[in-house]
Image 1 (cartoon, rainbow, N blue to C red):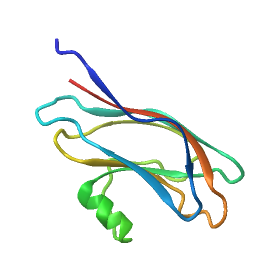
Image 2: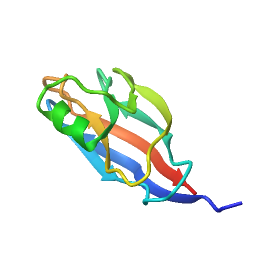
Image 3: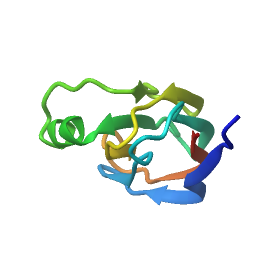
Length: 118
């Protein structure tokens, strides 16, 4: 059995300004198998709903431009959530913390999200 490798994508607390987003990009190495993005998140504060996306590069570009997208993960507007999705290897992925719906409230978000692959 091959060992699992773990890449920390987001681990700790981040601030996401109002009307803005923060993102991390990463990829599972070419030829890796059983790649999964796994973890959890929780946002704090008044009106703490936040939206988390996991997109490939083309869909990230479309999302930034306000076009329709297809996502590996879309949390919807939530305060807390869990992610566990299979992703392809050799492709750049974007984990997006979206706070664009909040006109004035920045969000403090704790997340521990990893890429796990063999």
